[in-house]
Image (cartoon, one colour):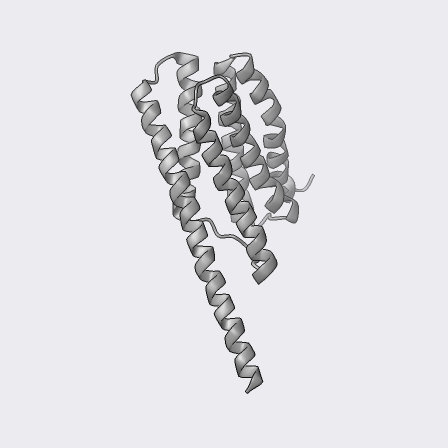
Length: 193
């Protein structure tokens, strides 16, 4: 095994951890579920660090890494909603925002040949808040020590950053689309002269 394949191995491991995490949550084995979730989170940080630090990037990693992250988060939120530990409306808003971002990126790429979507800071904070909420809820279920007030505060932080980052992405892409259309129109008029 080449050292450069370590980030991809960590991503595959994270994908494989989704199933035991779901089963542990459903079985209400919250202590072990928390350990699995933390391991998955640490593997995400480590594979990103190695990929950036040593340039160990691959086409597989660029697709599988965000897929593994989303699968882990969506699965965790779904099960915690199913168990009535988180509200369904939050899950739906998070899912809609992700669909808008993925759909918007796809459409924008198709229309304007967008190569890469650069994450905005609010989106990064949103991801952090989503992870913190899952950890807090699972920790609270395992240890029974997280207050409802703290959990509610995290829910509303996740809500605000989810909506805010979705609006910000849409605004950024909308402005870029208008600029690209104006540039295309300008080129057409310049070529016609």
